[in-house]
Image (cartoon, rainbow, N blue to C red; front, side):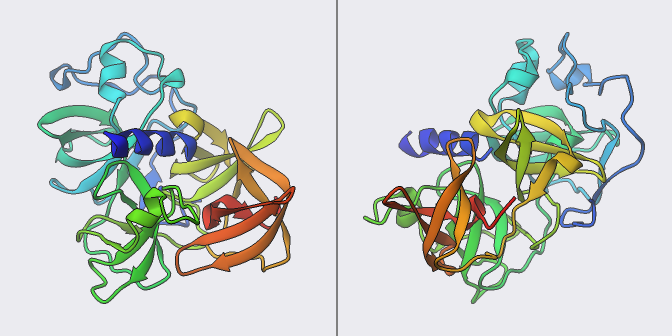
Amino acid sequence: MKKILFTAITAAVIGLGLTCCGNKNKVENSNKADSTEISADSGTVSKLDPFPWDFPKEFKLEGVELGQEVLAPSGYKNAIEKNKDLLDNSNVFYNFTVTRVPNDKTLFIKMFGDEFEIPNPLVIPIPKGQKAMVGDIVLTWWQSGSGMQRAIVTDASDPETPKVCYLDLNYEDAGKGFANEHANEQLKPNSFLVMKNGEWMSGATVAVMDDGEWKKATILNVTDDKVLVIGFIGKIKAYKRSDCKLIPLVPEYKVGDHVKAVFLTGFANDYKVTKIDQKIGRVWVEHRGKIEPKSILEVVKDL
């Protein structure tokens, strides 16, 4: 229960140009006025728009196969059935298995015997056959716990089942953080997506301009001009791509540099880099005399 609670909090706070092609998704047509239809046999009939975000509903997921693993919001079915406002719903992304592909707009996914239909833009496919190298950052899930995670590869002796350190779990210098306790955990085959530095893709961190502040968010899916993200307390939002800035996977700063780092919901100023450990994906920053470790996905040279 401790793991699940922490993961929910972590997923809430962090919240994977189609040039990314990490999951090879694309949009066939521009957004239409009609809402995505959720079929009656899914058990998720709702009076509300099942996809109210300003992001193309005609979003196609390429190469999705039956039995493939995907990441998706676990609370979507419950929200639809109870007519909750999806724009205000908090979400945690878990791994599901694809059971049916009825059309180009939705998928049927299943976890622990519970199957439901969900719009494509809310789904992140995890490709089969991915291989990783040491230093790669991958999109996966916490495999001894639960919930979507980014992780850095620490051992690629078997590139299809690499060992990783999780970047979205808390790390503590005293060694008592969840990231410390689950360091070098081995991933299962077909359970991760290798991310690419500088590419707009599922799992990438972005700074989004929201109410005059740079807020931190994680990309779910992206088009040429729209970005669907999960941000603070698990809220899903859509932004113009021009209102977002991609956070590099590879640090562009060095010890002694002044940087921006995540504080609560967004990127704050006046941090100084004191140490970088690229192997575990952590950066130590100083602010007002206090030094603390951050994920490399939470620190940026400038925005």
